[in-house]
Amino acid sequence: MSNVAAYALPAADGSFEKITIERREPGPNDVAIDIKYAGICHSDIHTARDEWGGAQYPCVPGHEIAGVVAAVGSAVTRFAVGDRVGVGCLVGSCGRCAPCLAGDEQYCANGATWTYNSRVAPEVQANGYTLGGYSTGIVVDESFVLAIPEGIGLDVAAPLLCAGITLYSPLRHWNAGPGKKVAIIGMGGLGHIGVKIAAALGAEVTVLSQSLRKRDDGLRLGATHYRATSDRQTFRELRGRFDLIINTVSADLPIDDYLKLLALDGTLVLLGLPEKPLQVTGRNLVNYRRSLAGSLIGGLAQTQEMLNFCAAHGIGAEIELIAADEIDEAYDRVVASDVQYRFVIDAATI
Ligand code: NAP
Ligand code: ZN
Image 1 (spheres, rainbow, N blue to C red):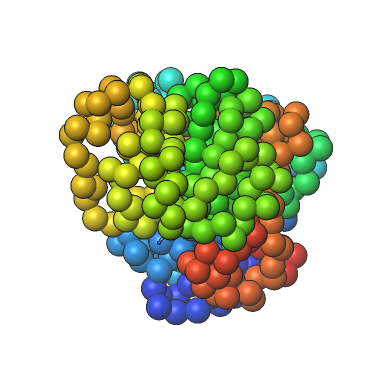
Image 2: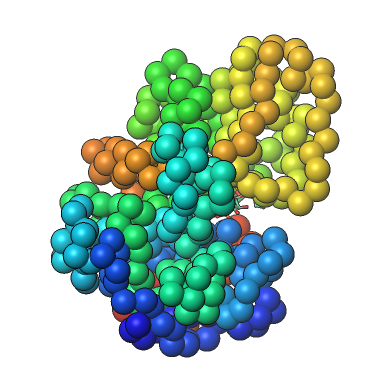
């Protein structure tokens, strides 16, 4: 075991504090990573503040990890010391079930192991549950380590490991591309990367945001249209327009209003988890053969494909780099939708 520094929340209503955690010695298939940057995903906040229940403390969040390989186990074949690498939301899965064999490890039938707050044996992580990327080092099975191509800075690559794949996967699954009209609801951490990726795939992109405050940025990142959902006119004018709508918002939205914006065979995909059950009027699905769907991050192979795609298209996240002692403030600002557009922790400050 080796000790590394980390930032942890001691309780749901506590403040982040610096602690020391143990990481296992790398086994034959493990890669030890010196973490350089960790993005702050809204899911970190939901988990650490126990909004989803089941949080274990001290809680070290962080599943948008970028760093450099520090050591490799004897059987590791894909990585060498000094390689630029990333780790996303997943650090383990059974590898035998149908979803795992199909490359959809995030839907592992036997329960995937998440990068933080997942129960594991003490030999995997001494406390009995995983601790994430708000730390200076992590040890991960090489199957769950991604190569970060040259040409993307590690700081702007970090958010791709969750936000990037979470948008890339449904955009590819529902065939966003030339001739397709795609809407992204919410231009936050997930949404802004979705705008960039959907535009790079060749789709016509519309942002549906609460206000026009971030309009100039949206258009600069690749959107063709930017509309305010606070304006009822938006819903009247865009009726029946979109082939695909991706909802990155976890707040309870009037889903019926958004379903009516779908064209024939259009799909509305949920990424956020609304607190209350959705209220959906059957007619809005039956009309125009519309679908309501959901999507959870993406598998390992597709995450690598996404990183390669982003490198080829010059796509990284728009970030605000912060020191580790600014995490509490950053959390409050994310909750207030006041971030442009992803906070990234500089691990040198941990
Ligand atoms: P974020 O940076 O906070 O962005 C969310 C955006 O939603 C905000 O920027 C805001 O955009 C909009 N919004 C916020 N409150 C709203 C409200 N009350 N009504 C309407 N719109 C509102 O969060 P994120 O990191 O992108 O994550 C978004 C959600 O996705 C979180 O719930 C997270 O847990 C979830 N998530 C899901 C997956 C998955 O695999 N499915 C992966 C990662 C995260 P505007 O200001 O433009 O309106
Ligand atoms: Zn995330």
